[in-house]
Length: 632
Image (cartoon, rainbow, N blue to C red; front, side, top):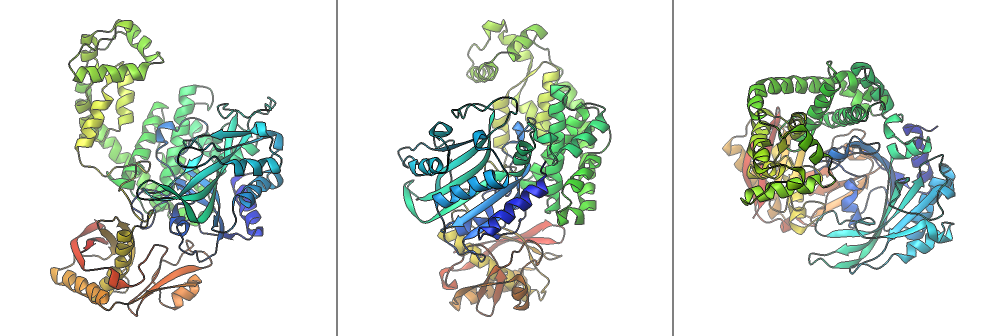
């Protein structure tokens, strides 16, 4: 048996022996990158280095990184999908290439984890009009003992990564698979569509650079990016077929069983609900630990959605106690995360507070919901037949599309008439009203509708949702068209200006305790959140603006040095000196004015910035102010 701590230790120690440096496990909230809400993979913090910026620890890196992915929220409930997970990663930044990358991954899997080669298979890129077939990787796999029958060539949808933005580094990938069942002999030929083959790793081979015109050009710096899920790997190595029975979930599941009086695995629906609760509470604990609180925008909206979904499914299981009781076990499983233990009280309070808010919302909206759901249902027999149809989603989409076009939209094959549908449909406007006015999550509206044998006009709901300006975008969609991920010229200029702005605030306000609390940069503007207790006066804002422009006019060079965090502290560099830093950091200096630890892209000389203009100053949260500014 191997647990998560042992797997991570084995992984990091192996790659350290192979001259890789361990990099820190960073925050779930990305620094300076507006393209996503959360850190979604181990490579996310490394984007600037993938496009050529030197990393202070060198060209060979490794770590285990905590991640959040929200595009799979609807999939959570099966044995493998998770909102929060840990990812093993290794990187070559222009150092070794395909042969050594594949050999290293194979050696770790077969020599360290002792995975038998007879249970091992791989996939490689089959090629398309933009990039050639990856026969090189296939030949390497053959040379180390993988038979041709166990190598599958797959399309770009399966074996390709990137770019992170509209342009930048990208390339094919080669994925590793493990034959899961213990009681069935692995077939000689690898079939990627056979669910018994489970992916356990993925080497991304970044050999291309996509330009603005959409062309794929050979990359000047070729990179390797390996990713492997901790939860999935430990599940497989321990002979299990369900991640929720592994050490990262089982204690949480057992607490849910105790609180609900239900048995995991006995009933399909109840088991799914238990998995959702366990997943969402774990993810919520980690998100709160990184400074996010429930709200109706951005990361806060995702957090609110997770907590409220967990509450909803808890009610379905008959759980009457607070989910904070379940959250207690997250701290026990992940006792190696110091920031969890440090913020435990706050995390549990936030979960309880959100439960109280949601309870009030549900109570307030009950009478409104009762009126909306007081519709005439389609007969149970007709509804059941429709819901069991393999073409259910296709049929319902067609129904509502025809409805808007004022055509005949009866479903004759199920003996359902136009009147049946009219009487039994929750309209898009009604569903959105419950969401907007009372905070009913869409999942709850769906469950209420299904339990009453009613239909919902999903397309109508989404139309209403899009009509209203909202920032509740998930990480799978992204928030802006670009950001530091593509390191555009304008983004780089604005990022450098943020350094000048922060130091100008500390100087004008005569407060050296002012620190950056967050930033968000697009090609159009910069946004800086900083610690300060009050609104700035017009005079102060003008002085800050003038000071930044005065520094720009001095045409000072921006210099970069590599040093230890302790050396950076002694030299007066700004930074939050905690466990997030590795052995070495990059320190950027602008004359005698600004010295700051940073990983983002910078101009070579501040004369490139142009004229700095503050557009708005406002409150961000308690004790934190926000400035939005542009370069003209």
